[in-house]
Amino acid sequence: MPRILVVDDQPNIVRLLQITLQKEHEVFTAYDGQQALKAIAEHNPDLIVLDVIMPVLDGYRVLHRVKSNPETAGTCVIMLTQKDRPDDIMLGFNIGAYYYVPKPFNVNDVAALIRRHFSSQQR
Image 1 (cartoon, helix red, strand yellow):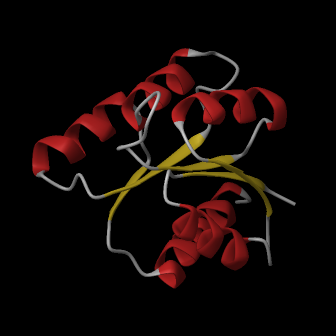
Image 2 (cartoon, rainbow, N blue to C red; image 1 turned 180 degrees about the vertical axis):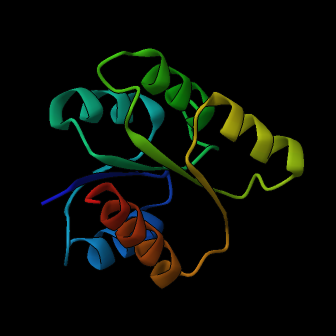
């Protein structure tokens, strides 16, 4: 079962994604960038859903650390954030995000995106 880490400082968003995704995936959660790095080291997720605006360490810095580490560089990261200006989106892609989903979002669309990602990996 694929392992997903959901990282957001808004507990309601984390819970919504956790409830939706745990039907098909093993889901871990974190509420700031530092917790995210700890959870990545502990759980080695196959995919990370990552907010940008968070306390302690923002999502761009977490993404940079994930992509700079040879052990996690291949991990799929979906940015899920209110930072939706073109330069914000390009920054996410330039650092290594696979997908960029602006808030507000439809949880079923995010679940479908994740499902599509994993099904394409199995080919």
